[in-house]
Amino acid sequence: MSTTCSIPDTLDHAPLSSYQVLVFSLCFLVAMLDGFDTQAIAYTAPALMTEFNLAPGELAPVMTSGVIGMAIGAMTLGLLGDRVGRRPAILGAVFLLACATLATAFAQHVTHIVMLRFLAGLGMGGATPLLLALAAEYGPARHRGAITTGVLLGLPGGAILGGLLAAKLMPHIGWQGIYVIGGIAPLALLIVLAVLLPESMQLQVTKGIHADRVRRTLQRITRQPVPEHARLTIHEQTVSKASVGALFTGGLARSTVAVWLPYLFNWVAWFMLLSWLPTVLKSAGLAADLAPYGTVTVNAVFIACAIPLSILLPRLNTRSILLAMLATGIVVAFSLGLAGQQWPLVFVLIGLAGFGIGG
Image 1 (cartoon, rainbow, N blue to C red):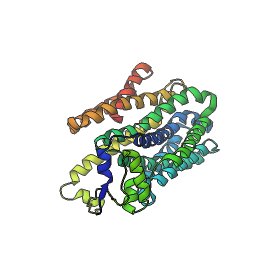
Image 2 (image 1 turned 45 degrees about the vertical axis):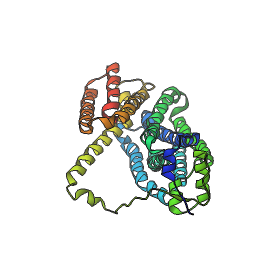
Image 3 (image 1 turned 90 degrees about the vertical axis):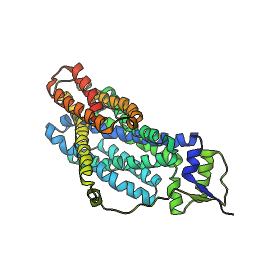
Image 4 (image 1 turned 60 degrees about the horizontal axis):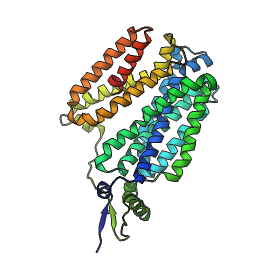
């Protein structure tokens, strides 16, 4: 008699295993290096202005090219992962990120940096949705929110690490050294990922491939045998295909616009803050070796706020907390423009930005 083995149900009823923690940790490390590289341009921007004799406005293409690459990567590599597998797509994203970042250290013209930041952005943006999908699929439903939040916190964690390294090491190794570190570290991690990172079990079952490998992985997680004759299944969901236009029909137009616009403008504010903060602080008179601490502060407060918010959010009125946080971000932005060189106040406001804008 044929029996079935539901992968999601099996994971939900099994205790969390060390193998699952390994998968989550690998995803976190990729996100951490992603965050390091995302902020590398912010740390090195003042040095790039000096190296290439640039006015602040001439940095705009360098700053925005990576963000554009991230947007395209997030939209395309996620779909590629559904076709070729999450594991090879993640490995490809990390390889692209590593090579483009390492090559930036040897750029001879600002145009080269613009192109390389775009390529690095493809890898950065493409890796994040793949990591979240893989981590979520390997986690039980009861821990899924904590798992995805933990993986995402690798991004600001990497940004903090990069800021501390930039503040301590850049006076000795130059801006090029930051990109050497940002390129070699993911290449080293790539070797570890090639050995240890597994493929999505659900994706393999959906494609009808590697059933024996999936059984071995399940056994490694649950430490219980999976019968060879058992048919592996996933939760089938019927999803109707729809265009983006469907989000504006059936009374959804107002809600769609109400979600999209705040997200868009907040994202613009967040990336402007992260990308330009060290440059603005240096231009305002802060010592160059202290400017990266601005990004460290904003990301540290973001992490400190994200953890309790992720726990409390289901119990809070989302609309009210969102309005309060956005109002805080607006007040902070105006206040930063008036704070001058009162550095203790400036850094307090930067921390509040981590709550109001980042949160």
